[in-house]
View 1 (tube, rainbow, N blue to C red):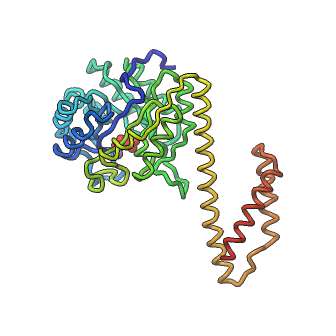
View 2 (tube, rainbow, N blue to C red):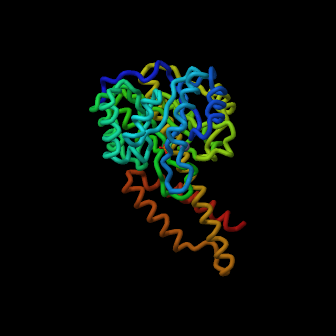
View 3 (cartoon, rainbow, N blue to C red):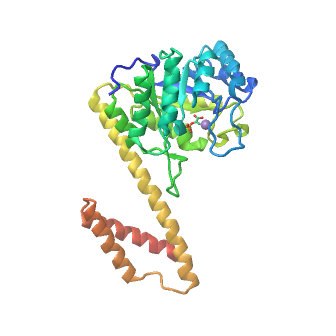
Length: 351
Ligand code: PEP
Ligand code: MN
């Protein structure tokens, strides 16, 4: 599927960076100047911002388009911005934007995607590069559907951007859960489609960005879109996840790029990264479980109840073993794991 695409850039991995939002001429130009020549290939900034709640900073709109032109002139980088409506498309294309992207909230809405695709075609600009972020929910069909709508309209310079999925799981350390199996499935179905990763919206917090960026490259994704801002704490949107241009360039210098080309090695790297992700999920679940264990310990102490209650312990082991069987895991293996978990839980409640 989507096998007649034209590359959006010659760079591999492709690095796109810039602020979440274009806030002022100084901020846009300052950021672009600091990034120029440092391994960033496309400069990004949101001109129209889709905000969850009304009343927040919704972007500077068309006022910011000339700043993007200046950023392009002073840095030599092509410029990218988000579009969500036909009006945005026309203003962005007429305003010299080189790369358009559809945001997560837009990809989730086929009517909006169709309107954007139609307006690119009506403007006779199907030569423009378009990036499609994943929809908010982990639905590979909706993501693919958006790419197909643009493809049908005649756009061939397409790429996907994986920015993680909204999660209700409490205790997740990420703002948007990576769920790597979804972009991997997209890549499996469309081997010719470049899939980039946006570690910023995935992380939500800047200290998690480098690790996710490295994981993305380790898995063999085709590039990164990273948010950076000259003064991140004062950013008008997504302050917590933005890093300084200086930190971004340092991050890029530290990244290791895997160059192995044999598909066996790539496959192995991809699967190992999935294992790493599973282990991380296990550790996070264990940590959440022990937090609950300590709360129960407190309750038992206050109510003068004994810590070890063998009836409950028996029930837990039996239930977990039955569940293991249903999941295709050896019950004895799972019994041993839960014995260890119970042993540690008792130790935690004794403290
Ligand atoms: C953005 O890139 O600034 C943005 C709004 O991203 P997303 O659509 O992934 O939330
Ligand atoms: Mn953002």
